[in-house]
Length: 346
Image (cartoon, rainbow, N blue to C red; front, side):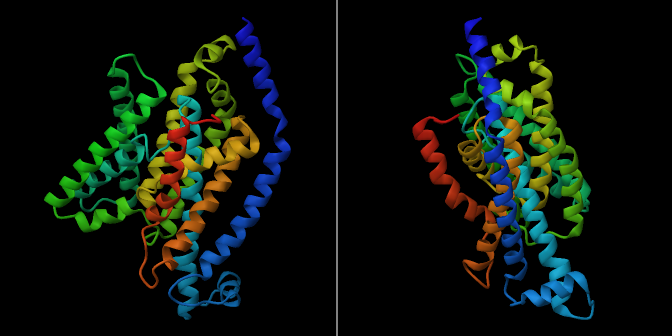
């Protein structure tokens, strides 16, 4: 009883960081606007800000520069912001539900599961639509999570955060290998290289519409679930003691991860480490209340991927570097730091 009382007081004490969260959101949105503008004007073709403004406010379809902005760069930048937000929120929800500081869509097998389902769809249904690819991503994301939890649970001693992370790496590696074998056998390796490198070059307004629909459901559900995730992050026994239905909360949390990660992978491929990095950075600024972590993570995740996408276009211009390589350069050292410190601050 004393432990539960202490946890209840801890939960009530989490409400003291709204000011920090408001500052983070305001600064993050301001930087996101500047980054989005830089993303729209950046590329092989130099386009000035006046041309960008004219393309938005007074579109002229006869001008190539206007077409580039409206049909290529604007949807790409919008998709980058949405995908970054989705992956960051998915990572935050996964870390809260599993109490595992190393949990993220890329490490826990979710992204690899979605990519595996994508290659199956491309191999056996070559004429599949974008909506079909998105549906396949959702199914694959679910397959990845189920496999990770099954493998982790079968180990001696039951499921622990460390075993969950190890199972995620193992399942992700297995699904990645199967995908590579299928892509080589059916001669679609070149097409699949996009999904594994991660990138936003192929995005269009249809991609943005898919992300918008997924986000309208997934992000809203994540926000509604944020208090439950906060309580779950304190431990299942405490959660049950406070009257929460743990099974329902976890099921809804998994649905959030399915929807957001599935949509993100179907558009941008396997962009890694955003779901790992951003929640930890967010907790440093706003504490451990997921009512604050989730919205701030969405803003920071959007900012990180927009900036990374700019780097992907400029680091080896005029050629494009996979955006997944850019995020990995940031994420791998961060992952090693967390693994060495065993997730301090969680």
